[in-house]
Image (cartoon, rainbow, N blue to C red; front, side, top):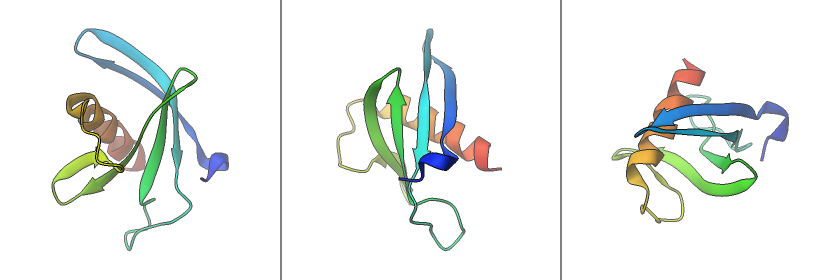
Length: 81
């Protein structure tokens, strides 16, 4: 993980505030953007997420929190614009 390029997460979703850290992978895609991201909420690992042709998803296939994963993915995409 590329901890030198971590950035803060501060997001409101469905009436709740989420704060944490997003850490990009060192591996980059053809567009130069990291392939996946480690997302922590507070001090707790939430998920490793990546963007696929079907949108944002948990890298390990756990999509129990699909809405929040999409919201965090949008936050990441906005960060890289």
